[in-house]
Image (cartoon, rainbow, N blue to C red; front, top):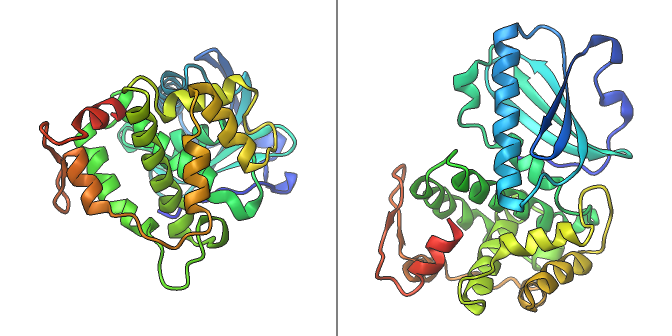
Length: 297
Ligand SMILES: [Zn+2]
């Protein structure tokens, strides 16, 4: 599924006020106002509510709290079953809009990653469009880590997803670095690759005590969220400062203009991740960075 994320959208794209089912959910220290297009039956609405609670709790578990004290979640009712896409907006208050199949039941929502992805966007300040790779990278990477942590996905499945997905984030011919190559692969998976490398380095340098998760928690504590627009460097510096390192800025300097690929096979070997197509990953607990891998997920 193509992952989309826009900074602005006309208000007309919001649901018409007269055609909404509204539920206010107080959870994970936040108030989420759920606005759904009419047509979902009561059993569906209950499944939707449980799905939103699960997602919010996974995000709060990873970040220490839900990223915003309150926000709206708009659900558009579309043909089919399951989540058909999501977008996070700020206009002027942050809100999420997801397209949800009209035939969706609890089973279709059990494996969904889109809602958690959008909720992670809420934890990162808005950036210039050309640097959207950081936003999509954090949302892609932290969504996975948060869902494993919450028991919504297994570690072997997630590492296999990373092993399958991250090669799409490698530079291709004509690449000019993360800041200058706004392709789908470089934005989502190139950004996620940046996050994985950052997490590994942060954990290594802190004796496994602090990784990207603690950096993102520090970013939130410093006032960073989707409610504000910050330069990319300020975001990375706030996360670095929270863990007393310069790892994120250093990695950014190394990758922003570089078309040098990352040696992923070597990284998997060091982390002790072996994966075959369609299979959950197998782990080598004797690998040099096996402890880092366990600390990540
Ligand atoms: Zn996104």
